[in-house]
Image 1: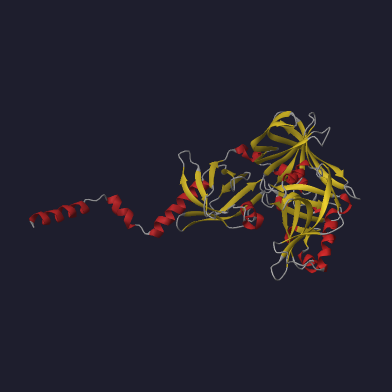
Image 2: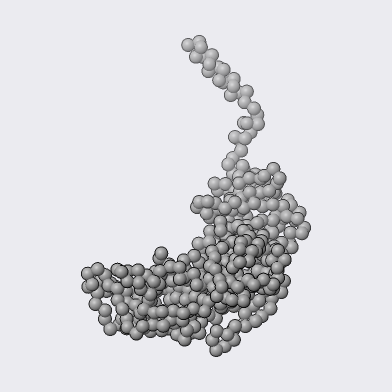
Length: 457
């Protein structure tokens, strides 16, 4: 019993002798501690004379954006970027900001910014963010944030102290000119971007696509200028960032292409001019951006109807186009198809497709009646090519691939598939573009009909 009383006495002495600082910590309320944390982060944000520089990468595989931010004591922040879309709305903004503390410190921009614009790309599937959770301050005084809106694989955003010359990083004019160039074929309602890098002093053209919003550049083919039918298909994709008047690739475009060895780490773009193409009756203006590569080669970057990358579709044998991927002048034709072909659910393209001992090359619609019986109604064709321009020659009769028991009975509406095949291929003016890996757009540039097919093999 005496030992037990002694132990209690020792424990009481230990409590009494606790450091006064420890007692003081626990005397502060949660609200007081939160207010102190908010005040500390705000002081850190407003401290640098030139504000903060951020190299912002919304998601792996996308490009990056330089952003300059200067925070004020008045809860206003000046944000400057080279996102030139929406009439330069996001190039230079002064908006409100606040710091909240819920499960941790959060930095929130209270008006629409380039962060919000990127967040909303592709129906808010791009995984950008506009609210940031504070993590810590590094030994060299950088501030580390992570994205609040990402459920997993949260992006890290590093705020580094800016220097007076950092404004020259922003490639506003280049971004604006690239967007102008990428919109050249809006009148054709192309899903795809189609550009080429043409070397002035080399017998070489690189064909591909440009996603200005996500800052990615894709190379789908290389060809000889002197002989466009001497080409090779490629699958090169690189994110990029703008720096002044240059496009810097995350991964250099390097290799031996149609017998020529190159290495391109960046493009410096200097002057934008106009030209024209005439696939149909009217001349269509296009833009041509002149410059040079990081290796000193003079080049032009320009919109192009001819794009050898479209020939890649011949490497697959079976494609499907959901009815929503069939458009006329950019608009849906679902109601029209439903009226003409009530049983149709998808459009199919078969390219040397092997089925029950047959080799089939044809295009048509998958049909299924109310009883669940189905068939593929198609017309066989042969094709000739001029780069990515394809001319179809159809056989006259509609053929059928029916389900195993052969129960599907075609009705008179089936003849209406001819209407859509003729529209897509009319006049031999169908061009094929590679939209993304395994996705090809067939576009009749002269009548506005287009269909995007997805490879199934």
